[in-house]
Length: 259
Length: 259
DNA sequence: AAGTGGTCTAGACCACTAT
DNA sequence: TAGTGGTCTAGACCACTTA
Image (tube, rainbow over all chains, first blue to last red):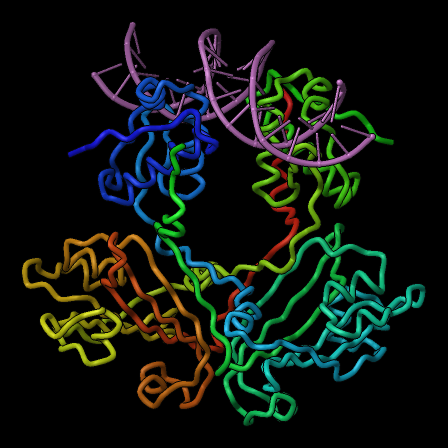
């Protein structure tokens, strides 16, 4: 068959976008298989009577999507789909609650100023001079069911007061920004699996030794200095992470529109 | 201070890359703060005597990195660092074994042809006509310690034989490709936390009810039809996932080189 | 009306690969 | 030597925002 496909230069949809979707659909249809070469940039430019720069912009989209790769001097080739780089977005943890139409709420269990113990001194890279930390304990619930237990620490500073707005839904980065003048610019999270301690079980209203996700988060400022730390316990029977990889046909219903 | 910084047009390093790193360093130094506007594209082009298209290519790098965002008609602005989009790469699961200098090995526990039960029929979207599946059971070890237990299924086809190479380190996508003529192009993984059953505990050599990661993977072909499925159990005391987000200062040691 | 970013052109020269 | 992708230019016109 190999029906000719067209590009509408007068469409409000950019030419590079139309061309990218056209090439993508050829790959997703199986007309272009992994390892096969795309037409050269000059060929595509001539065929559609567009500039080579526009062709390159379209191909750049496919390269970003991981569907093709270019080799200088040789050509541009369809990549085999990558299936080993699945990433889990932690976003899901709170997103899924909303997706089910449940009301998410946060309860403040306690807000204290504590002295840093040895573990926290090490986490915050502190010497013994400033061992005072702000310590918040919260519980996340959905429809009166307790789902997660979070303990958050940040360096305490007397100069700035804690605002009432920080008490409603205190996020770690919110606490850091509110009580200090530092801007957290990067974060590190470590996800582990564990079982509930007696304290955690009591707070979550589940049994001891129940499986849970444990996420430890550290916030860093521009100088890469730790400015916040939290340890969160998520009920294993209520949370899961989903990830995808490869050639994903997302919203192909919103295709190219002529006119 | 505001020392002038330069671009070397004769360097082998592309101008757009030099400019991107220059702007990035201004943001990471705090000279440009979140919410503040970058100089206009024309201003930057004039200051460095380069083309506006080259300026746009540099800014495109920063947009991809999430450090700035452009608003048509208004300008380009430094974005506040995103800290809520941490992603966990599953790659770590096998990468960390190598990072510790340990030898990773795979042991084949069994390879059978089985009839699909109700659960597998549903997973593979099968009617009752072709219920035969290839079933592989493997154990992943590092230095004689068993770390993970994997059960893999794919639709069985008599036409293609199972090669010896599939028995050494049988990956799910490898099995699918080997025994059928379909190319898996996308994958979905679901990560959950659980505790070991008696069977799993015995195979991994740990106690019953020990916390574990459970990952269920489904492979799909071009028609979005399931062509492979696996359920893997990872020891909770040996695995963890690490993720980052925000403005990450990666390899700034390999900076711009003049000459 | 003036200024911004978004798209596109028709060239040019370069680095790399193959023959 | 010919052909490929990689970079860059000096314009042009457009859509959008603001005054």
